[in-house]
Image 1 (cartoon, rainbow, N blue to C red):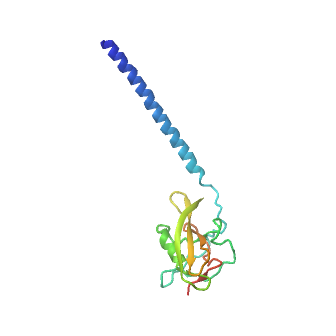
Image 2: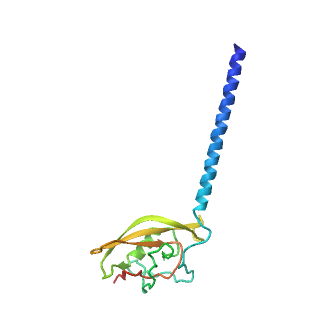
Image 3: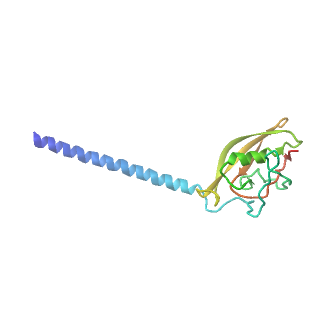
Length: 173
């Protein structure tokens, strides 16, 4: 009886070890798959076309908005994920502040007050200005009174570029 009990305990222990090994192996496989998938999301080459490290740092107005003096002639500027509006300003620690500084400097096509809403972050790209080595674009919906369809702008807080007013909008007076 005693030997039967010991034999059953040994068999149960062996089954538990096998089950434990299976669970550990399964977790390791899942971790490897997740690491592979997350590393494959970010390309090592940036698709951004309008990054310019020689662009001047934007200046601030007395209203704490960026001073914008030029209009873009490129239809893709801000409207295409490969041509985002690059609003890097000394640091990227408060992304919302710099986005507000830019957006609050804009007006509708006839000077209308605009409203904006962040829709999502998307489109990862490599960047030397982040601790994780990658940045994301923030996508904003822009509206104003009398508008038929809202517009969508892509903003990049991680890279520098010449700051301009996108086509279809005006510089706030």
